[in-house]
Amino acid sequence: MNKSFPTARRMGDIAPFHVMDLLARARALEEAGHDIVHMEVGEPDFPTPEPVLQAGMEALRAGHTRYTPATGLPALREAIAGFYERHHGVSVDPARIVITPGASGALQLIMGVLLNPGDRVLLPDPGYPCNRHFVRQFEGEGLGVPVGPETDYQLVARHLEEAWDARTVAAMAASPSNPTGTVVEAASLEALSAAARERGGVLVADEIYQGLVYDGHAPTALSVTDEAFVINSFSKYFGMTGWRLGWIVAPEEYVRALDKLAGNIFLSASTPAQHAALAAFSPETGEILEERRDAFRERRDFLLPALRELGFRLPGAPRGAFYLYADCSAFTDDSFAFAGDLLDRAGVAITPGIDFGAHRPDAHVRFAYTTRLDRLAEGVERLDRFLRT
Image 1 (cartoon, one colour):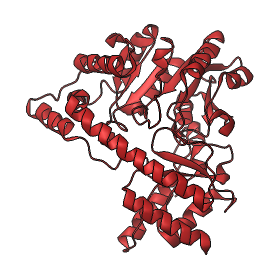
Image 2 (cartoon, helix red, strand yellow; image 1 turned 45 degrees about the vertical axis):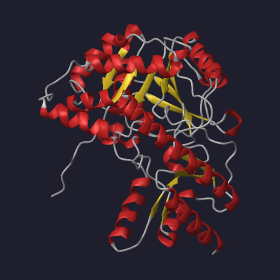
Image 3 (cartoon, helix red, strand yellow; image 1 turned 180 degrees about the vertical axis):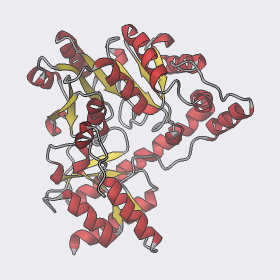
């Protein structure tokens, strides 16, 4: 007998990560004895720094396993405020900082606080796909605004002026961005914030890759405004992906609402993870993280010219994160099929553009340099052979 399993209508609008299908195929090929070069995974290949591991184990031995306040461990909020002072010269009241279960928890709180059903959030396209799904989760609409090389794949104030309507309540920018690795400069951040504010809305700044910048400095939105929501995470620069820990720096007026919603949704972020994260700001950890940043820079500086030499088009030099978003239209008009063939025939896993939006996804693929330099070199050699056949 057939049974009915009711499912919320919103689930029809929440797409899966298509790269996960490719990753499953890659794992199956590895289990069958094939060697796969992974350039699809957006996760640092370095382990969590040893001082952080030690701090986490000490927290467990000391019995730090009970709930913290919903907004997070006070000492960690103060440590994050100190981090902004040291690295950006920005003074942040620790009371404005809310600790969350990863940046995903931060986005869930922000969208829950901002959105009524039918409200709209402007998002760059291409961009990180889960952002629009968090909007949809709270019955809003994520409107992808096409961006390209002419604006470094970033929203600018002109986009907000053209796309903002009566339903729009926020715009979101990412610096450095996924999938393009580009950075928003201070003047553009200020203009974006002003454009949103003039229309009665707010800017949400995703800064989870901010520590991973290789040329110059990526300013925080906090350097130009106190009225934006700023998201950061311990996952990327700090190498703590599985610890599931992030934070929001919120406008003062929203902190109470975030506190209330956090207490209802997840009570608090992981207590051992919060205690471990205190060690992320130690000088010893800082030295480790900077060495890793240098390694990522070396990888980028190898992979970027290598891909261009093969015929991929990459305008400009992405300054941050660990991604290269490449125009592959010289080889295919179907990036998803191209990625599948590359995996099956050459043993190289990359991410098709379809995962990042609707603006020319078939013409783009993303390469992640989250693997060793020798493996990247092997991947380039295989890619070269693949393109010649």
